[in-house]
Image (cartoon, rainbow, N blue to C red; front, side, top):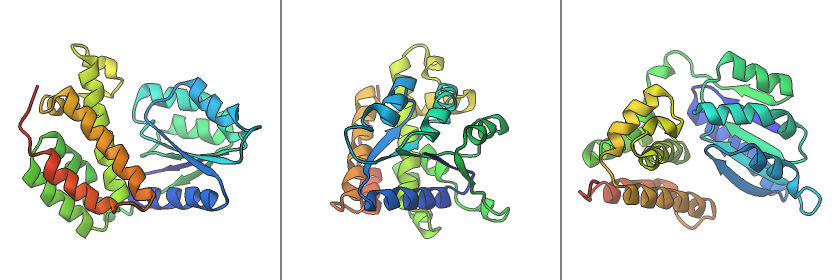
Length: 242
């Protein structure tokens, strides 16, 4: 089964996709997160590899359609995910017509969650990601508080920051050839500038911290909103730049 939640209302996408996932988990399904670009083999193994030996599974797929490679792979495996006995829940931004048609033709269940025109003037979570990328703690803290005041869910904020940090680390790994990171030209130009404010080691540690807080929050060990506040106040303090 393949569910695709897309559009520019990221709060609803987060909320409704999480409801779909939680519904399966409450029935005994095992939850697995698939973040970022995966290869075809990974998707096929997830769809069929353990179907005969374990119970139902649900996969949350995110941060994949913002790169050409991720989009291409997911479009190729979409028919296989649709007929899988397990549920794949995809979170995405606004889909282009070609990608949407591929998913629709494959038989995916799709939800286009768009904001009313007035709502589109509200807070932009990517401004917070930009502040973190600029290593501007004061601006990042101010924007984080505003995001909460505007009703953005901590999970949505976390996803946006995770995406930005992951992209910066990809650029660092690409070294002298950042274009090999697979990012779109617009995202790449901003990410290259931001990546200069951090060392590769710092970004790896930040990414690990983001993953840990996310899973700990879903286990009920920590409050995700508080952990994000702590992250902004502590991570952007150091001055090490390489």
